[in-house]
Image (tube, rainbow, N blue to C red; front, side, top):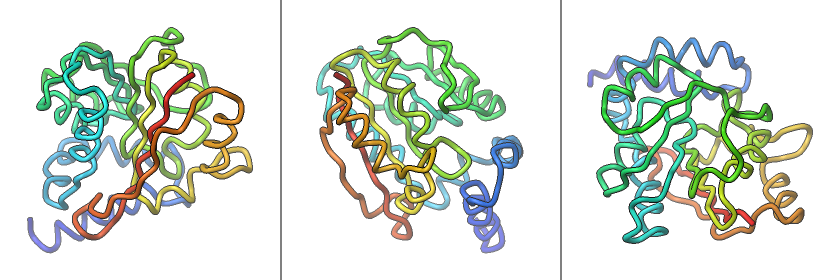
Length: 219
């Protein structure tokens, strides 16, 4: 990757998570970015999908038939890593049809759905998935804490919600006047889920950005 292209990619990354942008602006950026998204993320050493897939593999061990929703699937980076680890029962949801079009060419997902993550009810039955993963989608004008009740609702009792994102996205991911961390605790206090693990990882994107991982079990 040339220096100028690297600078362009970092500008895109910053633009797509900038708090001053709108959801519509983010969607347009992803529409334009979709054809180059995979290679650009390889070039900037985006490790989030692989780190997250390894965490899911540790959780389920030899049980590779669990039904997993990749929420905010994009072009299927996380799904591909899960597939490489032997998971076969994968579905995808993303707010950008252009990104899903790329993902659907890879033979990863049994079903894909185009929908934004948020407080609005998804067209998915309650208690449907063994695990919902949401990787890299929690950020300003992407998914925020307002989507948590839906992620919980569509996960089976005893199943897991695993969310991970760049560390500096977390402060901009609150909802309705409360912070991201506030909502995690509110849902736990209300008996919707219980914390399994929260951890920071150093190398979410190369050695430039750390990441945060959140694992909760649905009650």
